[in-house]
Length: 224
Ligand code: SF4
Image 1 (cartoon, helix red, strand yellow):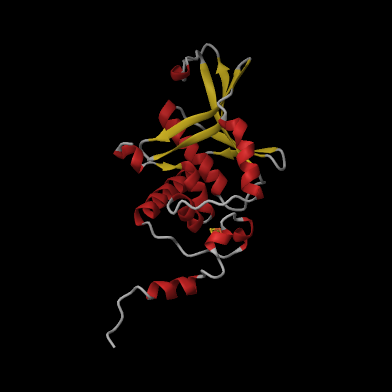
Image 2 (cartoon, helix red, strand yellow):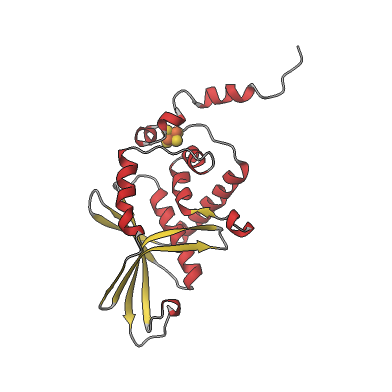
């Protein structure tokens, strides 16, 4: 692995970071992982998306499991499904790397097991994928979508400047977290209920108060 690849962070870490910075550190820095029913279902459901299938229908292409990266933002990952829709067969070719003639609309789709969340973690993860694809293919993507399996519904996500700024800031903070290598204290709120790492994390016992106490044990004290 060269230095460039070493610096690059997985897009999945960004989703964990927005959900809970401590979860992100435990999984991606401390290499802890524990599966619960929700993560097992999510993993099985991603198998088809990761299998690299390609579907060609008239005027439409679907490619799954495509590797994506951004050299500018130093992130990488895989997109569940990239949909390409022909919008002008006689137009200028905008996807020469796919050997396609004409102009195509590029539309990323990310599959999620559950249902839409109150926080921005899924939208930010999707936007990070969009930023990678825009950089790789030299196209502009105005809309993408999240498909929630539990409710079997596709939620369209507008890729506007506000979401892009939010995502770029989150990526910067994620890189800072990885450089810092300090595990943040637990959030200890309702997010912990469904978290597969709660037995490892111990959000109640490791509350901010007890983390501060533990940290104080390693700080220089006044001589007796
Ligand atoms: S149990 Fe709570 S604090 Fe701990 S990693 Fe999971 S979400 Fe974060």
